[in-house]
Amino acid sequence: MTLEQAQKAVDDWIKEFGVRYFNELTNMAQLTEEVGEVARIIARRYGEQSEKESDKDKDLGDELADVLFVVICLANQTGVDLQSALKKNLDKKTKRDSTRHKENNKLT
Image 1 (cartoon, rainbow, N blue to C red):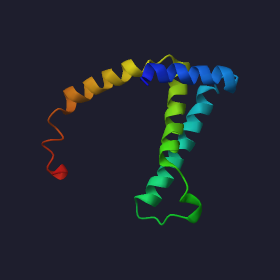
Image 2: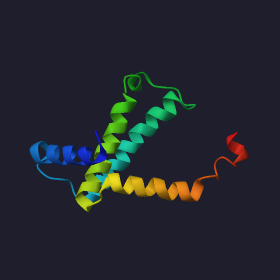
Image 3: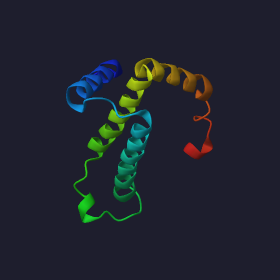
């Protein structure tokens, strides 16, 4: 699925099941909540915190998809073409950082 297709799929889902988009501020709060859920899994599964029994069945992929869903909602309701924005962002990073990371001794 392309980003363009994902944006349409989310928009179709919202129209069919979600009634309407939450406003941008609500979606921003929702995004923060979803990122927190991802952070909890990462901190406990891959970091130094111990994983609680109740966290062991959490699906990182599902939580990342929740983050992506809300990002797509925000893009849709603010008129951002994510496919174009990502391409532009990668071009910017390539121009700015094409040698920076390779020359960073901390990464070797």
